[in-house]
Image 1: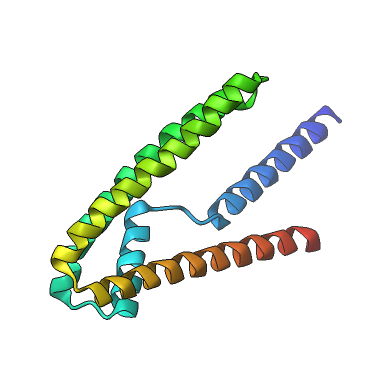
Image 2: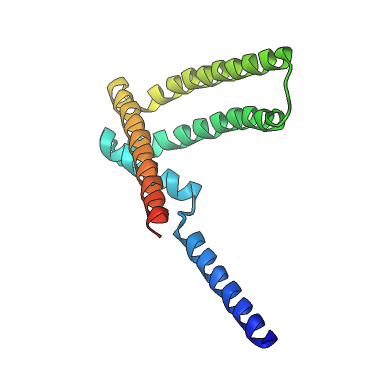
Length: 158
């Protein structure tokens, strides 16, 4: 009886482990390099960049993205620290202003990089790049929503 119980328990744990591994494999793995490559291809095609323009533009583009990410990471870090704590009105005020200041700093960076972009692209081409970047983000959000909805439907049917 004990042997049957333990054998059943081991079999059950093995099935759970395999099932968990399969679920883990279904989740898409995020690769920053792959994301940047897709972003670069998408923007290059939609904006009609020549290989020379793309070669001059994208190092600046990704440099700006990295700087913006660092600014935003610092705010997220502060937010996570304070999320579980009860904040005073003064602490909330300071945090809200810090978020606004971060947005101002990011806007200054974007302005600085606009000048750099215009050194390597014509203004109308830069406008097409900006439009393509927005389209890329919308398409990405749409795909993420569809993926989440499909995953949610799959869980309901199980």
